[in-house]
Image 1 (spheres, rainbow, N blue to C red):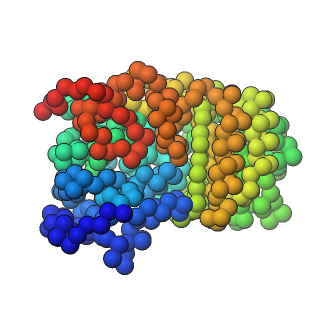
Image 2 (image 1 turned 60 degrees about the horizontal axis):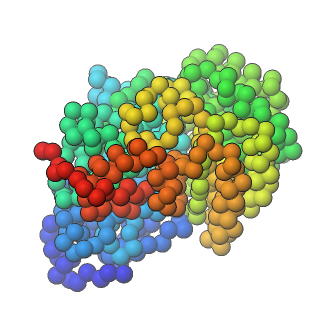
Image 3 (image 1 turned 180 degrees about the vertical axis):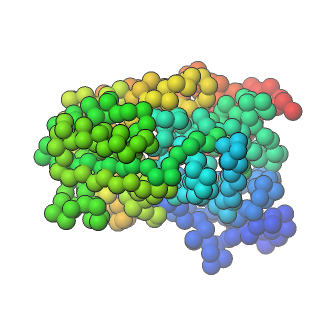
Length: 473
């Protein structure tokens, strides 16, 4: 690990308003900890930024001292890119303020905000923007990679609803990016990840949501796996537009109050439906699914939207040891269903499962070239092989399971690429495959303008094109 001498640290502290944390600080271990407890990197210093000025100062200092830079927002990235080993960590986690203008239906949030922060502020006005499915996920990382959740079928990706962003570039300068200002950069950050700068502010378009939404979880036991997966696929195809959906294959029923005691810890498969229409519409939707194949049990309830956003938090607790791989599927065919059922029986941890996100509706209405999002805009499933365990010793086996299950389903995939936010190991060829030749080439050209030295490389990295034109003012 690089050790900064006292004089260098004094220089950094003089330039920054926020606290500079090193390994001598009693708060060092807490400051470098991420959601994925398997990540154990030790930065030379951590700058707890209080505003864009600290971000700029930290970047300039790191470049002067030739330190690798990592950027921490929510700290939820499974690959652990938010913390560098031996370099300088730019920590945005203290920047979580959110301002909402209900008249214009716009929200401005700082770069370290979580979806819980944003949802709480927007729901005070009965508004929301598409976010994830775990409330302590950071707004920044999710949005920059694309971002989908319960509202995506109605309103598209998080990135589709981004109106503008404020960034600190690799040279420490500030820019405002929108469709009007630095439009090439604005295109790139909507799906291209953290390759182009540190986003200190996001402005989102909002939509009327809630305050009460409807929810249902239908669970089928593993013994009826192929039948259950066929019913889930048919149910998803027939869902109304005002419904969000998530399938959970290989799910072990949790010891939660909503699970009947005899079925707790039972292996099976689940369909989760969020209804944003009327109670009657939601009830009819759930009844229709139950009539296809009677579930082992159904849990249905009405709840505030923020509670829906936090419903799955217990499945991904802070500090869990995690690994994942993902791929895209046009459909869950009988062959895919059989493979998924086989792989579900081989997992070791009760927390490990295979979430599948259905992307259609408004997601498909956005032109593929409108954003840098890496993936098809045709209707499809994004399937993730999520290995989770509270035991560090058990993670190698779960990681091996994830890789093997991914390999087993890969022949059925739409291509070699996958959603970049679900890539724990971001090999260069898989990143290129995720974006495709044309998009990757355009991203590389933008990267060459805004970060020609690839300062921001701890991400799903886009390598700068060899030649670049000077940055427009």
